[in-house]
Length: 338
Image (cartoon, rainbow, N blue to C red; front, side):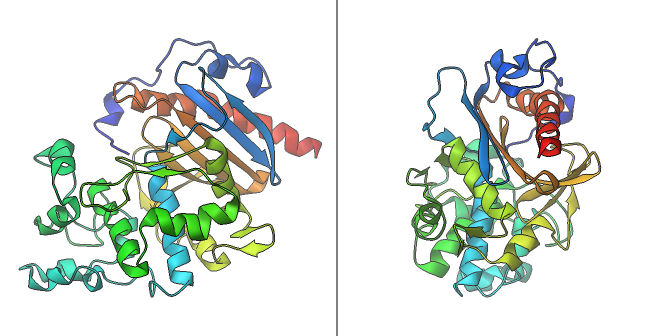
């Protein structure tokens, strides 16, 4: 997610009429929306809606942007389950021994938890130099670690793509496998997801933030959401521990964020909100990429949209304010019918 002055942008991206219909396949907010690529909805473990738009194909691999972070959070949990990582509170100095020589001793004690909560205190790409300078670095992970801290680790929430990429570096060094290989072996392959394209950063590590991203089908994103809804099990097999799934869905510590659905909190690479007084957990990527888990309706919504910096924030707001309420009502109606 590359948020820049998001509250100053207008909320409506396209001139469209309201939904007006009860079924998503006939709703103008979708059928006349040039930004939407694919929408997949499942309920009670079964896909109830799968539709492509604007010339897309059902098996197209889409740029998932910061959904990459949410997927990586599941991989971190699997790595903890398998003993590659001791716990989410492990300090990064173990994987970056050069930090022992850094004049700021606080850096080596930054925890994975703090990075996943966007509260590491590390330099971020919205500071002087910006995203372009960060992405052009031959070794972006080392670049981030070498910069002065901007706040005391654990104290200040600040969305930080540059720091989150370090999670991929940690996973690779801890397991001896690139994030993409680890994911295929322990997550994607287990779910029957055979196609994925995980882009690398200049340091040679698979992108951990969503700046270059993992490309997946919308159906794959829905499957990953359902894995959490089913407490880490798929086809009777435990893929990630129930303990880690419950930690992701009901984190002990959350931090307020001023984007996403109104009133959202952030923790461990996921967002949390009470929507009509019901708990909802979601991953969100730049431009309106969503993986939404709705426990009380036993439902998962996955959507990919066009990635266009000029309209990205407005697309996300349009989904939250216009499209999602329609889908919410649709799922409620189905749930009442049984």
